[in-house]
Image (tube, rainbow, N blue to C red; front, side, top):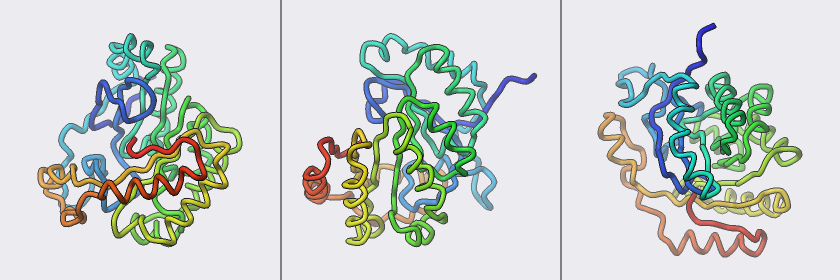
Length: 256
């Protein structure tokens, strides 16, 4: 039987914003959403008309990737860190992700799964429960807005999230604060209400303010950047939202 393999576009050692402690973050190729503010446009699928193959995209085996990750085991153990699977969207390669999560568990490597949750429950739920920590990104709490801006509905996302809230692993809720998109009064009010509803099950809430740091990637890939004229979210705006949420939940963070 051929070894299990999958597509990634990067690995980042000594990451400190993708879960607790020092981590290695593995970036999966491919994503079902098309968010205008995507910070990793190189994760988008290969077969887009007129789009070059993303630089760095490569196929790797599970054994090869685990061997690379294990080099920093001492740092994980000393800091309470581990491995984070991000992207792109890890759930878009379920067989590869399942094999990686299984291998990490066998080697006693702590795992975090950074996901938008957009995959069929049949595919997603066993994988979500297999991670030690889930970093769940919710962009829009109104399905019509997610469909309008990112090309998908919340049907799978909230179904998978509700299941996690019932019987899943540790859960961090992450909210991208994007000017002109996710910062509308309706979306922010819905976000606040959900945090209130879920406060006893969510370990941490992270606000992720938009910044234009990925602009150079769009230029390199020769992709139009929809956010090229959008400024970084002012610190005062992020702090005001954090203060609003601190009245509801004890652990609110700005940034990963």
